[in-house]
Image (tube, rainbow, N blue to C red; front, side):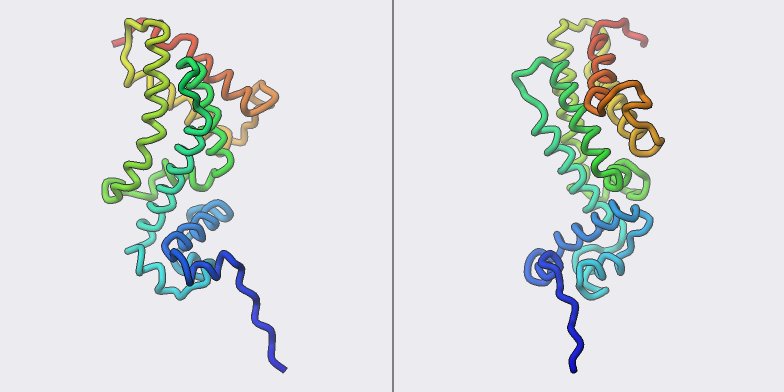
Amino acid sequence: MTSKQPKKSQKTASYHHGDLRAGLIDAATEIVEKDGVMALSLRGVARLAGVSQTAPYHHFTDKEALLAAVAETGFQGLSAEMEKAEHHRLGGGERMVALGRAYVSFATSNPGRFRLMFGPLIREKLNYPDLLIASSRSLQMIRAAVEQRRQDVGAKTGNVEADTMAAWSIVHGLATLLIDSGFNPESMGTATQDALVAHVTLALVSGLGLGGDMT
């Protein structure tokens, strides 16, 4: 009597016949989200993808290169969520709130990738130009909304770069508190995450471009 072999999932089988590189990134992302980035190894990724232990080296020189690819897809996903949320016919302040909601929503839905994207494990990001390009898109969208808000209020002080950093810091800090510090919207005074993001973002929007220049 022959023993039954476990049936490979459609996803695993596709790695052998389709885009192996994408399959390895998918497997790595699954590990990062389920078990954390420190649990990731090239052997573990190959095992999950259902390929040989040497297969990852055909596409990635080492673990850091694979992590950079996972982070790149994370930034692409973040930008896609933000692009879906923003509406260019909205005022700058409304766009900032919409972008902030999308930013925090992505972070709390993908905490493993979010930590990797902004963490220190990819030491030399300059070695990964595609990652740098992907990472700049979300910041460019925040900058565009900030610039529009400054125009809306006729800002005469400060500058768009510093205001962009202020806006980014607010939504990024809030996202980090929610995924890493045990906070939730109720403990921070609101019924929902969207309401919390709106409240925090509007606190910035209401004063953006209206205060004095501290320099």
